[in-house]
Length: 527
Image 1 (cartoon, rainbow, N blue to C red):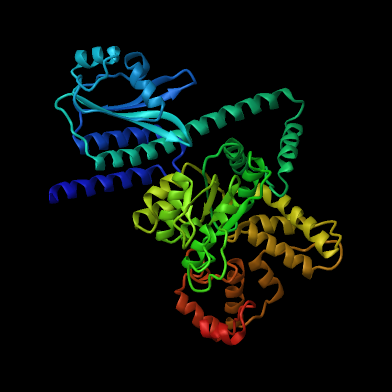
Image 2: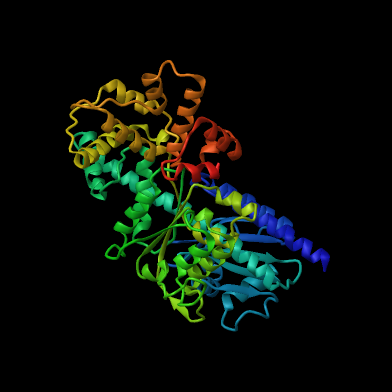
């Protein structure tokens, strides 16, 4: 019994290892990683052969693209499985798991083509697991045994489903990137036929500027927009991954505006701003009397977002117990309000965002693996501002125009040296930090010429003879503003300053730094 349990735990560790290797994996590396993973699985389970097939086109063609054998290779790569196993392929196309433990006896009577293949090649057992993403079957993994019959347990099938989800997500990502490259190829052909490349780019950008506040012509950001356009009109779950301040919320709104649900309001929840007990009520609602203070029934955000889009920001901060409830809604579309046993049915499209490494959190048991696989259907990595320098001048003028309207100002020019300095700054706070700098400059500058200074440069320009304590205080204040006075946690001020939170609190107290959001006495108590 103990040996069996240890074997099961070892297999789970292998699944974690394999799944982490596919997180944000470039499309060009997917095939190699699949081959490596198949080899590890066959060697660990002591099977004879594993076959990885992909559906091509809409005619039901199932082509072998990967495989590994420890016995004798039976199916060459490129073979069409639907020609040697047409009934098996039809069942897989329907998303089924096919378990044939004792062959040929387990074959239905009308599976004549499959029976001939099994007898000819001596196949004793096989199991096929379909690769599903967003209701579409992309392919299949087939485990084959030629030397002995196999009896598979329910635990084994649960593990196979998790493994299939990992491979399905990787295969979907590869297919999406291929389609995107093909689309870009068509765009390039069109560009060659135009009189000038700049005219074509302007047409492209003007079309994309219909996306309201979405700005960016850099290749890195154009790639992100291409990914968004591919997934927007589907019902698939989207996971935005990127640093704080990169615009994940704006891009989630773009997905909603381009989706078939655009006529309904997108609903947002920040999972980091509420304690666990209030967050559960916020998401799922509660009945009157469900807990102390519940004086009336409350409708949760999932019910409000029915037939629309729900944006879950900072999903990495979601407590483990709520992760299980969220997984149920994603899988079944059902939940219960707090204090009720009556299930509520909803049809909600989930867009999530995080600046955390969910794959690492999964290894540390801080984030559920099954929820990660469910959210990671279509991950989109948002580049930081320092990776899209070409976009900064356009963003600067967009923010200037916005603040001119709200402040009643008329800015006509910005010195080129100031623009150059802004572009060269690393922007640890990304777009959010850039907007704060522009707002500060608009307040400080008089006249029609706007002077801009990056945060460090502004301190040097304005205060050249500061004491050590004043310099230290200004630096801490700059970092606190870029983190919106968040001190603890990933990407908080303490982490950016390479200090322990307790040390930073002590320095703030000593230097007289007080947050504008708290009375002085309470903030000093917090320190």
